[in-house]
Length: 323
Ligand code: CP3
Image (cartoon, rainbow, N blue to C red; front, side, top):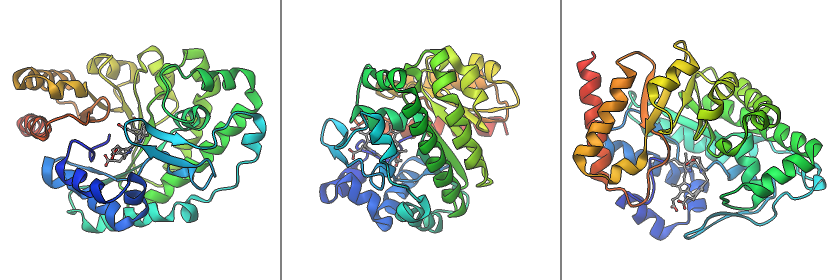
């Protein structure tokens, strides 16, 4: 999830001098931000500093980040012709600066800290490309999906090929795991997931496997169609706090690894409440191999760094106890 970010003083200091896109575009700065949480938090893996929306730049969609309102897309996709007009994108060339950041970060990280590369899943990318920014209802996205099925499938196919090859390229550059973020797919009805999304997530995950490293398939709010979500692929399935970890694990099957699932808002709770809930997640995992402890979604900007440090400490204590 977002490990770096506004909750961290050293990140805020860099953001005084650079926009998010500048940090992403300069591999040396992106590598520096990637390393910040490692020293601060003592986590076991680093996630690359980049953003899922970077492919929108070579696609000509016009990406910017506005203070307080998140991403903004200047030329959203609203008609079928907008899809057919999208230029071809070669991730190894057009997003080469991200691959350079992967190489620099891998070189700078301690050998025992793997780097996780990532990309946005076709649905979550399509939602930003069509809405033009953040949304609560996803109404414009769903309207396009229902009214323009051919263009929808063409768009999802484009994103699947692009992010699948982009992920494999990140592994080739040194990432030791890959994460596909379908953050907002939980807004869909199960039948819409199956028909309009699952084939494209499956394709992106299949292409990513060519990278030869484990792939984490992440989303939030998937309890209503977790079986279909897991069936799309991924060596590891990410789940959020809306479903207990043990229940989710039973549904995805014991043969699959699981990532999750603390509610990030608990980091704002009194320390005893936070630690009890961390222990509850670990108890539900019951020491079985294949659990990656994580938050169910990203760190909130107002989170105290000490709360994250406390979580890492409790998880490491338990992991040591389980040998
Ligand atoms: O933690 C890290 O260092 C990894 C880097 C990372 C970023 N974005 C940098 C970033 C990762 C893994 C992402 C993924 C991402 N980006 C997702 C999927 C994960 C999730 O949280 O669901 C999504 C949906 C996006 C799109 C995006 N980027 C949004 C909605 C925003 C605005 C968020 C906000 O709170 O304003 C961004 C901006 C962004 N990308 C920030 C960071 C650290 C915010 C920090 C800032 O404003 O400087």
